[in-house]
Length: 330
Length: 271
Image (cartoon, rainbow over all chains, first blue to last red; front, side, top):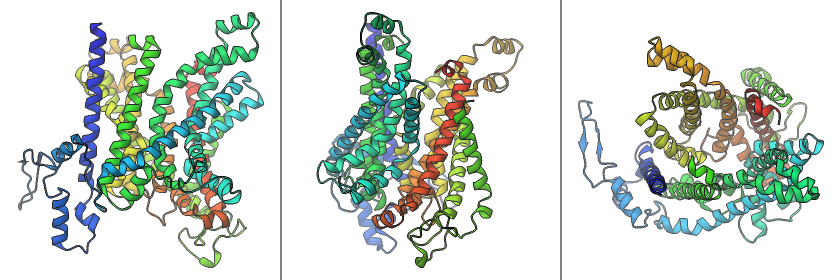
């Protein structure tokens, strides 16, 4: 029991440490901007007054960190301590109050922008996950059952194509065929449910390929187990053997990577959202953030996506430990 | 090696030759625009047709191979060296070095989705080929480090390592002469898959406008330029050819990686 609690405390401490580092990195990313962020945002033609006003408003006039090594007139560097009044602590203080700063361009709170866009991204990622599962399980089972046949090879080729064809190639092709040529489904935007199908298929394609390969090798492995022979000897139909016994055991490794994949889907959604003009976090990051050099939005989006990713991973880890007691021991 | 990995090696060899001999293979100017030649279908003069500004797609795909391979090779080499050194340090010394490196640093880098971290870095540093390579190295090394750490942990317990230690060999000699040569085999698999990942990431970042700036013939940039409705309707080949180039190159490196893994791990050969 004591060991269990110690293990849990250690994992939570590690999680806190990782989140702290991620937030710190994101906070300090603004310092990477070459030159003055105020000039980068307002442009070269801004007057010194405007620049100064902008810096004051967004706290850019304060020192970036607790200390720095500024260069003096002679070109040598000296340690200089700024104390607690710096941008790093400012960002943390606001963050702990649920504030991610204001957009450099529109002055809207970044939290508000993220809250508006977040549901669309989650909707897209979950739909992609469902589509991937719906494709991968039947294909993987068929390929595993008919190992070495033409069907198996066809499934393998499909899987390899899914892994190798990037979403930004699949996406525009799907738009061209299903939206422009046939007019069956929505292309750009998020007007009704028909607009969800193409982006979620695009985002889920690579995952469905990875899952298909996993299900296939899992099925092959499980089919060689003793319990399968027993089930067959009992006179169960092949269908029952595969779907009731083999799949149940074979899906354990598959389920465990789903959580990790949800996080990867969130990152992949950045590209898919750009292709389909899907108004989620990715589009906010790419168009409003990076495109318009609105660094506060970039920070907020990176933070939101990373924290969701970490949460999804930790949750998967917990479920995995709970499902499979052997992991807890190791 | 299985048949698919041989096909993979063949494709990679072709891409490599095309990249090296690009100026002799593609004689058309990659940047020359000519609006009177826009949206031409594939012909004898323009093998892959032309794009929305009349540029020759074949020449751009050929020169695009240079960018993709250059990014891939640099990123994989730098990431593998950094990853190997840090992974070897963590695995060999253990103790607090391992706890800090594998317990904390590796976990922090794995806590970000790789692509997101690369996007964030380039977004703040500014777009450009070298910055893109830097960002991809930052996200790439940790995979190698974890792999090598595991390998070193295993190899350092072998008898010949104990024998070397008993003979009075120093840490550096044991690590670099005895352990690493016996630990880096799986690195080749990782490097091959890493090439696929780097080519794909370069194209993704260039597609997002964060890689090589536009008139340069990066495959990702070409796809970004070809995905507007009028180009899709008039010249779908402007999207298809660079798309195929990416898919084939990535597929080839994946084939090689999978084949090598199978070859190095006899348990998988049966499957």
